[in-house]
Length: 172
Image (tube, rainbow, N blue to C red):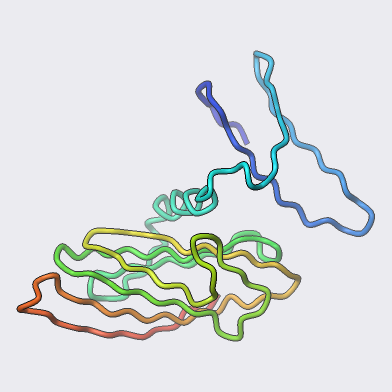
């Protein structure tokens, strides 16, 4: 991979699946000038680093987004299978409605949601024209990525409040 960059501080997050007695890996950076690389602990990364990373990835994958109706769009993607990450991206394209989105993992096995969520039934409140992402990590050889979602749409105008509920299922 070759990526032109501008001078600054960069974080490289490497997650590897160690096999048997192999406990080393290689990481290379090529530059015309000297580069200083320091190993830092995971807690040195910005708290929402992983979420921002997958949010950016999701917004670049617009062609994979599925329309659920009611101007609600969703994208679910697994990255690197076992011992990797996955995310569910949700977008509210309504100008005047709030979306309350709930997600749950069916037959949850070896799945852990990433901060700011601390349960495997995370929820989002999406203001009009707002989008967000729920990131999860597979933490074992075999994991379940089948999800169930539900959402409630409420009009911002309290006099004309309309509630619409829809349930669906995505298989991963």
